[in-house]
Image 1 (tube, rainbow, N blue to C red):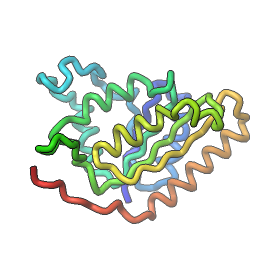
Image 2 (tube, one colour):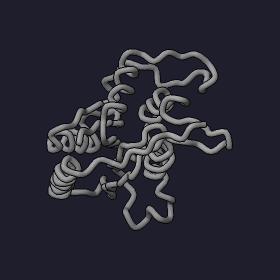
Image 3 (cartoon, rainbow, N blue to C red):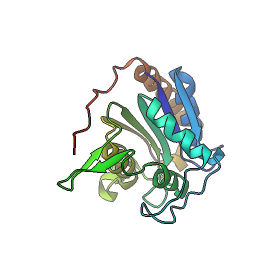
Length: 198
C-alpha cells in the first residue's frame, strides 16, 4: 500500500520532521513530501473564485495525492492549529471539483475516497489536557480536511508534552512510528466508493 507522507513543519531539524522521515524509511513504499522544500505561494489570493494556477511543485504534489493509497500528514500543533505552511498547502491543492464537490442538496462529497489517512501530530500540551482544549489541530487535519475530501478512515498518532520529553522518550516515539509504518504498508486499502452522480 503506497503512502504519501506530507511533512508540514518548516524546520527540517524538528521532531515532526524526524517522525515523518522515520515513517517514510520504515514503510518501504512511501514518498516524503517536505513542504518547506517546495516552491509555491501558500496564499490563496482569490479563495476559489479566481484563477491561480498551481505551481509545478503543487501540481506534482496533487498528482502524488491521487497516486497514493494512504495520505500521512505530520504536523506540529501551533496556537491550537497547524503551521501556516501546511494550511497554505491545503488551501492551494485541495480544490473544489478536484478533491471535493458539493452535491445538489448542498452537502459536501469527498473525491479522494479509496484512500486512508494517518495524522502524526506533536504538541507541547500534555495529553490529559487535550480533551479540554478541543484537540483542535488534530481535528482540523483529520476530520475537517482529510475526511472532508473523502479520505477514510483517518487514524491519529499524538506525541505530547514534547518540550519535556527526554531523548529516550523521543527515540521510543521514532520506533513506534516505524512499527506503525510497517503495519500500514501491509494493511488492506481503504474501500473504494464511486462518487455519486450529481
